[in-house]
Amino acid sequence: MSGRGDEAARDRLVVTARAVAARSLTHGSTGNVSVRAGEHILVTPTGSSLATVRAGELSVIDADGAHVSGPRPSKEAFLHAAVLRARPGAGAVVHAHSPHAAAVSCLAQVDRADVLPPLTAYYAMRVVSLPMLPYFAPGDSRMASAVEAAALEHATLLLSNHGPVVAAADPERALEAAEEIEETARLFLLLRGAPTRPLTEAQRGALRPASP
Image (cartoon, rainbow, N blue to C red; front, side, top):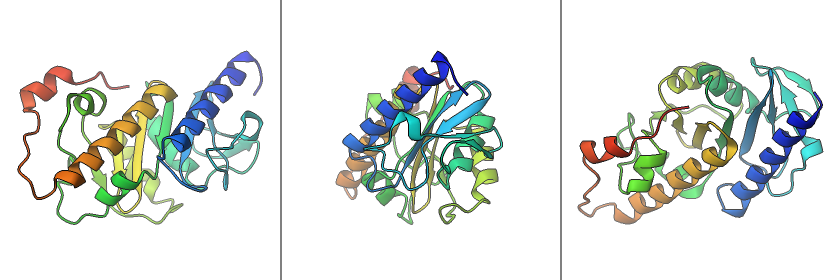
């Protein structure tokens, strides 16, 4: 892969990866970001920190998640490939390990079909719904089929005892949705045990974004 399109995709991925780290949506070498680049997918490499990854260090995989070139990809690269196969209109995926969303993913008594209530208009605008998938160990290839099936209907997912996965038309919008999930998860935890007044279905529906 080469050319201006590839360079631009690499630059956008790096900017997004740095923002994920700067906004404390991940830590250490956790979390990964991907963007479509022609017939291939650029993804952050294994063991890399999103705070320091550089454009020349990105991995290239195909639509099936197979390594094409560059450094060895994240062990969760297949997850990105699965989401992008399921959502042909999406151009990027952000997988974060944001602390409040991860905390919600560990709770037993939540609505697994839609984990977070629409507490704010911004959540309703950026996140249609957030189903929680069963637990899989990081890198477990069985996660691919579960994620792909869920992503056919949902652009945002929460992996049990793990963290959120967000697909969007571009990396900037994927980042915005991932950040909105984290902020709403924080509010949800702050309000646990207190009566809440989430948006009604009509109010939520009026703000619903078009799915990528």
